[in-house]
Picture 1 (cartoon, rainbow, N blue to C red):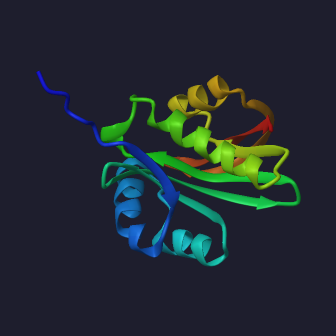
Picture 2 (picture 1 turned 90 degrees about the vertical axis):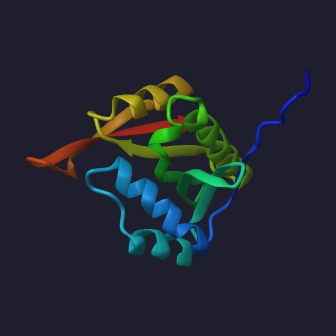
Length: 153
């Protein structure tokens, strides 16, 4: 019997070359996806943008803003085909590590109340709700609130 090495996941800085794969995931999993301009602007602004790969395949990404001892997680997504395998938690753990390394003392994010998987991920990691942004997200019928969550680092 021989062992088969499985490709290792990698967490590395996102580049413009990743944007096509990022947009494919974004558009496949969200009814109201970020645009290429949103991602390009994040890269150009110097936000902490990350690609998460399984072998050579991009399966997730995250966008984080860091300033004044705080972090704000703007986007954390995993491709549908890679969900429910622990990749979201691994990606989140890497992002939290970056925030800590760069001096953040608290990390904030917004999540839709209808995003049950996201809520389970974040609350299971230790985030707690600190507020609500009314009508924050576009929705099929009007707007949807955002739950504001935070994690002390």
